[in-house]
Length: 158
Image (cartoon, rainbow, N blue to C red; front, side):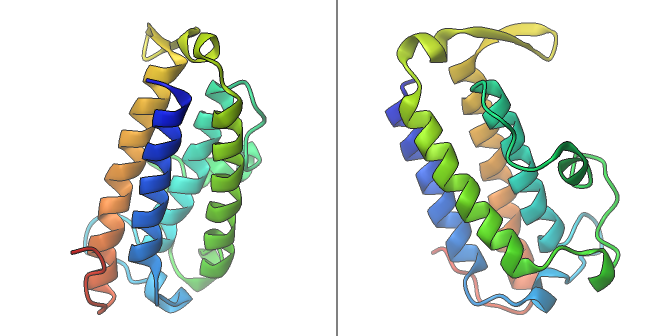
């Protein structure tokens, strides 16, 4: 896995996510499914998960730890408008983190990507961890397609 491969993969994710977000309002992002989290939480979770990508590359996290922790796995759902981050702000954070992610990936050498780190109690290369995080992000991007439909919008990716 090269940095160019990762850039391509994360660029595809970003494009797909923007297709699912197109035409949605803040109110649409708060539609709460019977089980799981609303799109507002899922989008914030995607942005907060990027902290792991930056950390894996030896970079500063995108969001402060306390902000990211609010959207960590197992955190409480968004309970309503007062508990939600503004949708437009989340999209801006997504885009800014994407710019930074692609720039940082572009600086990674093959040696950087082959360095090992402990993850889940075992050694993984940075490239393997970034590949796993890509899968994690793509999984949640799929959820945004379903949440888009729950908000009454037509599916965006055909």
